[in-house]
Image (cartoon, rainbow, N blue to C red; front, top):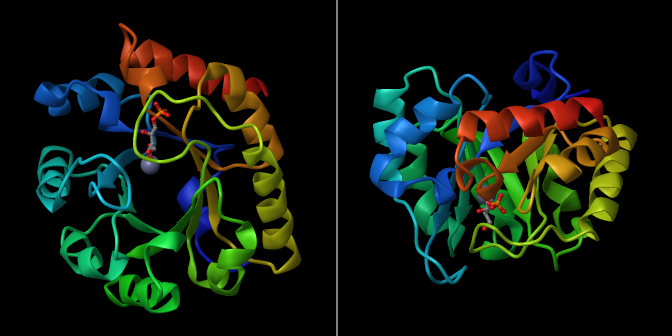
Length: 231
Ligand code: DX5
Ligand code: ZN
């Protein structure tokens, strides 16, 4: 196996990456602190109002999280177009993973290479309408493949069950080609589908509304964790 997935998982069955998109935006530090003991990574959704119909964060937030939580593993998901215009400014903030959308550039190979050249682990994300085959020629360059299980732009949408076929396809592709990328699922993840997704082969679960829209983020994260382990 090539790549760094083994190291990143540290022997765990799966990793939990809360997305702060649905957290209380006035108190992001406090919100992260509430789930700190339950999370493996923090997932930051960057939206440009162009690639997706919503606006969210800039590089300054990564910098603030880095100072507030020096040991935090920061997983940045760029939903911005064209990717090449934004990669440099985010790479400067030294996220642990920087993921770009396969659909947001004509030059995915160059973009992934530029992230690697900056010393950051690159990830590639694919929308629900995009086949895995679009990314196959560059999967050897990626440390992470993010399968969007909703159409990106907003939290609290319903999980699209057809994404399961893509997950299986990627698990197979990775084994056949002895690659080492982690597979992350993002969108509509909650306690009732976490077990199935982990047992089907995903490595990283992103969850936003299921964690931050209830009363107790730590409890909600623990419930997802429990169901993911039992699945
Ligand atoms: C989709 C984002 C997700 C999403 C997760 O645009 O990339 O990270 O907000 O939120 P939930 O878990 O509420 O679907
Ligand atoms: Zn995301």
